[in-house]
Image 1 (cartoon, helix red, strand yellow):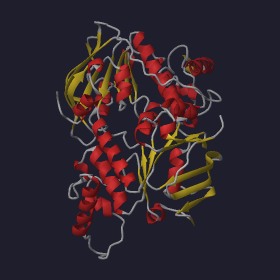
Image 2: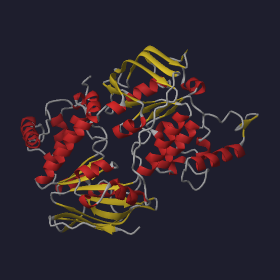
Image 3: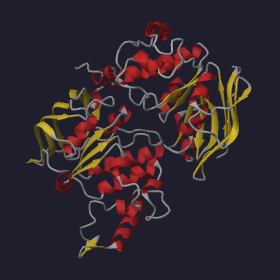
Image 4: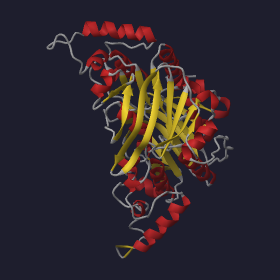
Length: 513
C-alpha cells in the first residue's frame, strides 16, 4: 500500500520534521519520517505497537536524539537535545505514566526544576496565582495547594497539562490520554483539547483508539513499521480505512455482542473479601461476586481502584485480610499461587514482561513454565526437549505468534505477539477459571481482535472469565455482566444490554445507582 497524502491546510506551519530516522540495535524505529504540525490543529498519530509513534514524539520532545533528519520550528532549523530545549521552543508532553511527585503539592510539582528570581526560596504565592489563572482560563479545575497523592487520575492529568502550559507550551503532545479516565472525564478532556486548538495551540494525540481519532482530531498520520503510510484529513476518512492502513490489510471493526451462554454452575465465588494494597491501605473492600461457567464477568473502573489487587488476591499473589474465596465449592482463600494454578484458576497479568513471562527464556521454555516437571515435558527428572519444541511449534501456529523460531527469547517479541505468547501459555493449561487483567491494553487492532475472539472461544468451552479492562467498549461487547469498582468497592453490577456507557462512567466515578 502506497503512502497516501490527503491533507492541505492554510494554517501556519509550526513544526516540520524531515527525514527523521532512529534505530535501536540497528533496527529502524523511525525510517525517514516527514511530519508537519500546524497551529490550531489536533493531529492524531496512529499505528500498531512498535510502529514508531512514541519514538517520533520522544525525539520532538528531546528524550531521544534522531540518527538522521532535521526539525524546524517556526521555520528555523533547531537542535532539540533535551526536554529543556523542547520546552524553550514551546513544546510540552504529557506522558501516559504521569511524571509527578506524589508527596508534594500541585504547585511544587509544576514549578519543579524551573528557575526562580529567589534561588533559596520558592515563590509559591506567585506560582499559585499563575496556576489559578491558567486553570480558570481553560476550565481545568486544579487545586494548586493539594498534594498529588490526594488527586484522582483525571485530576493528575489536568496537573500535567497545566504544568506544560505553565512552561509556555504551544505544542502539546498527549500520549494515550484517556487510558486512565472515565468516559465523562474523557469528554471533558476532548472539550479542553478543542478549546486549546481554537486558541491556536497545536495538539498531538497519540492513541490506538480509532473512535477518539474520529471524534476529536483534524488530521491523522498513520505509521506502520516505522514509516508514514498515510496522511489524512479526519473528515475525509473513516475508522475502517485507518485500521487498514495501520495493519496493512482489510480489517473488520464490527464489534458484535456475543450471545450469553447460560450456566447454573458457579465456578468462582467471593464472599466479603478484603485485601491491602502495596501502601498497606485497604485496596479491596468487602467484595462479593460470583462467576458461572461460560460467563464473562467484566470488571470496569479507572486504573488504581482495586482491580489489580482483586485479581491478585484471587490467584494467591496477595493475602485476603477478610472474607473467603471458593473455587467450584472448595475454599481456596490464601492458598499459594502454585496451588491455585493446580486447582484450575489461571491468570493473565497486566504486566506481561514483569510477571507474565520470563523475558530471557525462549518462547518454547516460557510455554511450559508451569509444566516443565510433568509428562511429556519431563522424564526421570530430565527435560524432554523434543516434546517442549513440538508443544511450542503447535501453539505458535494456533495462536498466530510471529516469531522466527521457538528458540528465540521472549523479549524479542512485539507487544501483540508477547500477549499471544502469554495467552497460549495460560490457556494451554486448560483452566476452569481465567482471570484476564487488561488483556488488550496497548495492543493494535489486529492483535486485540485475536485476543477477544479467543476469550469468546474459551467461554464457549465452559471457562468462567473475569475480564478486567479499561476499555469500556470491549467490556460492553464481551461481558455478560459488568461489575464497576471505585476505591476498592463494587459500586454497581449492570447488564450491558440494558446500560448506557455514561451510567458506567458515573459508577466509575463513585456515584452508585
